[in-house]
Length: 314
Image (cartoon, rainbow, N blue to C red):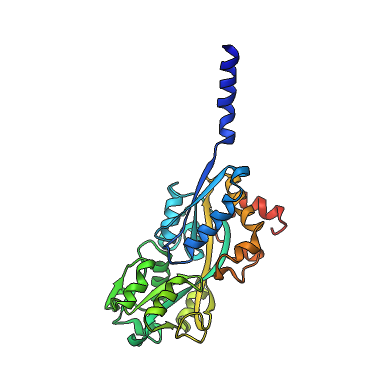
C-alpha cells in the first residue's frame, strides 16, 4: 500500500513537467495580414508540440491597442502590434500618456505595414486634403489603424468633424461598405498585398491615395518609428503605379509574465523554418533574420534574447 502511495505521489510531482503549456496570439481582423501571420506562427510552433509540450492558438481581435491591453491584463500571451503603438505603450506616451505598460516585451519585428487610404475612384479623393466633407472609415476603436489615422489628421490640421462621416467599422467590414457606397474611403494600416484591398478593388474601381507632403515629413521627424515607403505598383486592380505613403513594423509582443521557454520556442520555430515562413505570405518577401530586430521599441523578452544570441543574430 505504501509503495502505491509513493508511486502516486511521485506521479503527481512529475506531472507538471509534462503538462502542456497553451499560448494564444492576438491578431486582428480575418481579412488583414495579422490573422494569417498569427496562424503561420502557430503552425510552425505546433510542429514541435510533442517535444516542447507547447500548444499555440490564434485569436481574431480588435487589433494593436486591444492586443496590448489584453496582454497587460494577462488575457493574451502574445499579440501582433504596430511599432508606433508598442512605442507609446512601453514609453507611456500618446494614448498611454502616464500609463506605460512596463511588462510589455518585444519578441520580433515581422514585416513592414503601411498606412493606406483606399477610396472609391468616383469620390475624387486625390490627396489627404480631399477627405474633408467625405465619408471616411478611420478604423475600429482600439485599433492601431484608427490611432495612426488620427495622428496623421493632427499633423495635417484635419479634424474628425471635417469629415461628413467618421466610420468605426472593423477591417473585415470595410471593403463591403466601400462597394455598397456607404463610405467614400477607408484607412488601413497593413502589410501588402492584402486580401482586404484586393476584395475592394475587384468589386469597385478604387484609388490608393498618396499620403505625402510636409505634414507627413514632420510626422516622421517627430516619430522615429515611422518611415516612408510605397504601396507597390500593380498589386491592386486599377493602380498600376507605386503609391507613396509611410508606415511602421508589425511587431510580435508578449509580457514578461510569459515563460522564457514559450517565447524561446516561438522564436526558434520561426527562425529554424525561416525560408518556409517567408513563403507563407507575400508581405514577408523581403524580410531577413536581421530585420526581425529592427524597429523594436519595447525591450526584448529574455526568451527571445536567448534564441537570437544562440543563432548568432544578436
